[in-house]
Length: 287
Image (cartoon, rainbow, N blue to C red):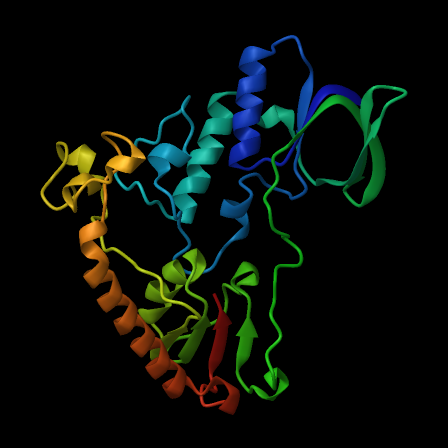
């Protein structure tokens, strides 16, 4: 099979590519190859408690279909619903071929085409295209990073990666350790804390979290007290240009206090957790 354009991946990027190809290149043939059985990429794959965006959906969403919901930091199911709605509204579903995993792509200078090997429902097929549009994620869906810890085999609890979350697992009244403090951990910890007996987050270096409103302030009648621009927080750094570049130069004392506090909390949590000693015998999660 030959197409003018092949798009790889039916997540946010692939859907955006399909819309723009359909609009700007109506005379070009294209297809979207999706390795999984459903669209949405990350937002269909991740099922762990509390999964949500770490960017506001007003800028992460599509310009041709603006995000209109009240919550700009949206949960995973809402984002997936938005993606499915977009695909159907712009008749893109018929352009997506599911269970089509690209396993190799090579440019043929003699033929001036891309030659692709594709696993189609488990069978190897071949496709060609003039242009290859890669819209896949930057991490492996099948083999995510999984660190190896000393004496890990001695741990008596459950060791689980959130990418492969077991939705049937009951962590009620369990002691839980979350290793890491990135976007996954930030969303996971508050969600499991609602049912778990105790949740401890272990982090290598401090990160800073700001508590904000659940709904976008602009939808509530414009900028409100406490959510002004960063320019009002401290003196402006004129070396970075006029206007937009606000400064936090006056906040160094606050940052240092936060850092000291965070480090103290982590050290305390590490001492209490006793991960290597198996003191948390019920459950053990990677975030």
